[in-house]
Image (tube, rainbow, N blue to C red; front, top):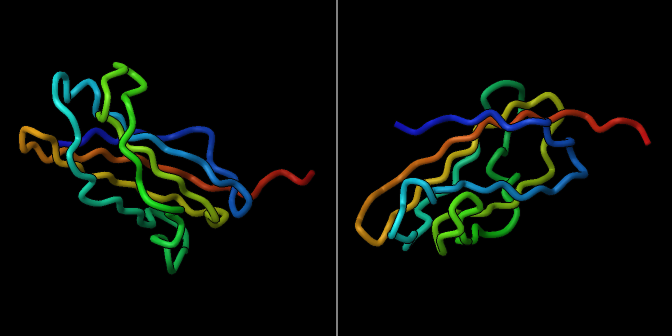
Amino acid sequence: MAQIRHLQPPIDATPEIAAFVFDYGPQLRLNIITEVQQINIYVLSGLDPTPQARLVGSPAVIPSPLTGDPETAVKQLVGGMLDGVRYGMQCIVQSVSGEHLCSDRVLPARKPFPG
């Protein structure tokens, strides 16, 4: 079962584009990601009729920030989030050994402070 991580602080709605990393390094010791099968983003609370539009560009397979092992993490840019929406993000990958792994994140969005 995938472990769900709640990300803090919330992303600023609209102006911010941020990179989020799904790190499979600890699970994939001596193994690598061969395919990012899917990145999903969905609304947990609030209203966003097009949550998939919040994904910016394509995912990139990168070294694990935790273990340093190559090709064991996925970086995805997100942006244009809507104020007051709590998003769920999910990444599904396949490893060279045939494992299918899933990682979930909860990401709240808020209106940025006036500048």
